[in-house]
Structures are given as structure tokens and as C-alpha cells.
Length: 502
Image (cartoon, rainbow, N blue to C red):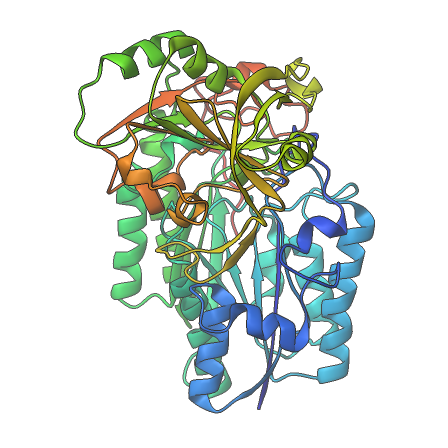
């Protein structure tokens, strides 16, 4: 028996001007192309990823498996059509050539391309057309913007139940095990899905917080009581596409009515508590003043949440870092500014030497009416690195990250990590791999929204959310929504919950 598995992951921020060519999906690959075959197996075997779970299950069951493609990129603007065609053609060619007994896909659920609002649905539909009777399982991110084609062409769909996403491996298992049961004739998966017209703010989607904590606990309870998979997707609001927003999918064992009942229960709870998903913004100056006044036994996290790699940010806006420098905060480590030109300048200067660079601000943001604003910063080049490190966990344990050439610039008060590509600070290894002990700092500036909690929540004494500048803004009034279905909450205040269900 043979299992075909593949990964194609991208969360698309349609307001972002960061380009998404094929090269963006090649992090850590020496070939200039996404990993495939044995290289892909080597990269993900034994890791806390969905592919890691697929591989482990296949090997434990004595099943043959093939991995034609493992492609993942940090969120950014729409995926270039050529990149999308390369990846989907690679997967579909393998389906035709290998004739697998089952197919396991790890997708994101919020990919938008230059031509398609829904990048994943058409892929799953193509795979289904090539393998009409083959069981198909799909693992998805919690930020899926669900379109019908995914559910209509898969047999099992499972989404992450934690944010930060520390259950990616577990979601792979939740996807694969019902598919194997289906192959053995031990289960007959039946699915239902639905959505609600609501765009929860990402900053209010964390599963440590009400109401998503309670919604995900309900989904887990449904699984404990017999559902094969129960998933509530918060959705990704920074995608101006028709079906952006919250949805739910439930898979049962030959009980479609029960699946629909549970879908409605999840969606009704989310809709009832929709106002708790609205984020209240504090002005940056007020946030930094409050940070200075805090007395804490441990690091104070300064969260630059408007410019985050995991939501499509350029990671080169300077408003929060400038505020920190202007306020004279000391004993700060900042992760990170993405500026490959500044990195080159500092590498040329050499370790131990003083340098003045025009830092950040290289990216214009027409979708929010802002141009890039570089900041002149002086300091000592403290460290130069190749920017490669493995996550220690709990998120994506063992997965390799590649930031490109990376420099630590020490101003005397602030140690600034400057990278050549975007990187979410969701793991302490982001600092320790560069010789910085995050537990020893008074302040940690993190360009993150929720994922920072995976690696830093337990060591943070206090958290101050800093509304800077960027296309990950939590201020919806700055975003020009033209395509998303209307009315929708909270863009439109009160409305009835008209849903799309099946």
C-alpha cells in the first residue's frame, strides 16, 4: 500500500507588497527549488510538523510513501501564477505517476494567487479528478479562509486547534488516522461545513484567550465524544477575498446529520461571542510610556504586531523600534528588521566595528497609504551569522529556519537582529542561535502577533502590545476591503448570521 503526501503552504495577505515567487518557497533548500523526494523526507522526518506525523504513521504501519513536494513560504502578497503552477503540477504529476492508495496533503487554506482567490481548492479538485476513488486527507491552518472546493473534494479535513500553532504534528495525525481507517474499511468519513460573515481580529484569535479558547475546547470535546475531526477556523482577515472569515468543518463516521449539527454548534458559539473577537487599539506613545513604568521580574515583551512575517508583513517598518530608541529604553533585544542591504553593509564593516546604516523602511505600503521610512542607526557589529537555526519547540519542533545572512547590531542600549529574509520570532532559538539570551533582557521587541507565545509566553513577565506601522494592522479602517462579501462583522455593525453550509 502506498501513500502520497505533499505540502504547499502559504497564507496570503492581499494588502502586502512583499512578492511571492517560487524562490520564497525554497527556504533552506540548496537547489533553489522547493524540497522534494528524499530531501523533503530528510527535512521533515522526526519534526513536529504534519509531514513529520504522516511519515511517522506510514513507517509505523509499514506503508510505502512518496513525498514529491514540501513547499512552504512565510506569508506575503499573492503567489505568482508561475510558482503556483510549478507546485501544483508537481503534486498532480506525482498522483498520476504513483497511483497511490491514499493522499495526504498539508495545505494552508488561505493561499491567494495572482489569478485565484482560492489557491488550494482547485488543487484538491485536480487531485480528485486524477484519483476519483482515492481517499484524500487535508491538514489546514486555523487561519483557513474556507472555500467549498476543499471540502467537496476531500474525504477528511482537519485544522489546527491551537494558536500559536503548537499542534501541527497532532493535526497531521488527526488527518491521517481517519484516512487509514477508511482504507481498512473501519470508518466511513462524512463531512459538513459552514461559515459565518465575521472577520475576527488576529490579535483576538489566540487560544489562550476567550472566546477562541472555549470554541476550540468545544471542538476537542466533539472529537473526544466520537467525531473523527472537528475544526473551527478563525479565518485570515487580511485577505480581501469573497469568503474570508470564520468557518467550521466536522468529520463524522457515517453521520452527516451529526456533522452538520456540530458545525452549527461551533459557528453559533463563535457568532454569539463575536464582539470578543474585536481588538481595541492603544496608541504607540501610550504603550511605550506604560512599558517604561512597568516593574517586572523578567523580560517585558514589546509586541510590534502591525509588521509580522507570519501575517505578510515586510518586517522593515521602524515605528516601534524608533519609539524604543527615542525613549532611551535600555537592555533591549529586537527581533527583527529585515533589510538585506543593511546586512551587506554591516558584513562589509566586519565584527567589532562601528557602523551607521540606513535601517529598514525599504518597502512601500500603498494599501495603507504609507511609504517606507528608513531610520539612521549607529552601533557596533556584534555578530554575523548565516541565519540558519532549528526550532526547539513547542512550535514546529526541529524544523529548519533560514533567515539568510544575519547581523546583530548593538547600539549600546538595543541589540537589533537584522535579517535578509522575513522570519517570525516564535522560538527562543531565534535569539539563542545569535548569542542572545532572551531571559537576561529587560525588554524583548518582537515583530509578532500571537505566535511569539509559543516560545516566549512562559518567560515573559509582562506584555505591551505596540501599534506601529504595517500591512498587518489591526485597524480595519486602514484597509480597503473591496471584494469580501458584505455585510460582514465588524466592518458592518449588526447583521444576521447568513451562512454558507453544505
